[in-house]
Amino acid sequence: MNEIVLRASTTRSFIPSAVIRWRTDFGILHIEFQRPDGSTLGARADGHGVAERPASFNRDQENIILATFDGIERAHDWVLKNRLGFEYDFKGIFGIAFGKADWHDSGARDCSCLVLEGAEEGAKNFLLNRDLRIWQATPRDILASPRVAILQAEKKMLREQRFVMR
Image (cartoon, rainbow, N blue to C red; front, side, top):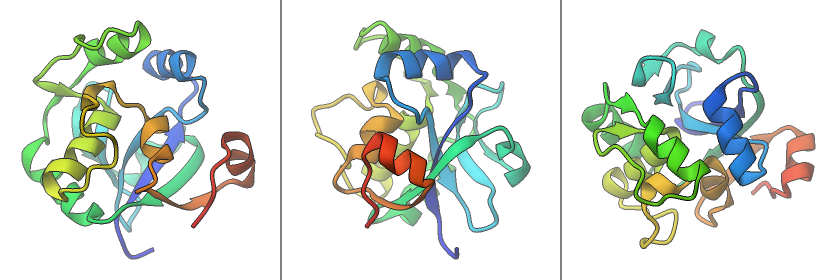
């Protein structure tokens, strides 16, 4: 793999993941950019928020799906330049859980919000309806976008989530 991709996954033991799983009834709970060396750029609730992480930080992830969209490199670069160091948006996660569209910390990002913002601002690629507030989106919404191509996934995940590889 010689390009940046989206890495979607599950981490079973984390409270924000459980909240998203409960609300969306979906097996994929996290999404971020992955580089060719396996390192990632994304928002996590690990105390570092939006950060670059070595590949070794992905050990506890399961159900990996790799995907792409037009302009993903520009989206990645925009996030790296404009959002590195932002805090994790816990308020937004609980807003998703309780269906509160206005629960969002404007100075923080969750994983899906970060990917969508990068796509829209960096790549000028609107993966979802432009009227949807980016902080309301989940990994399920991104992976279901007709503008996102699934590159690789466990057969079990393709079957359970009804994804089609392109």
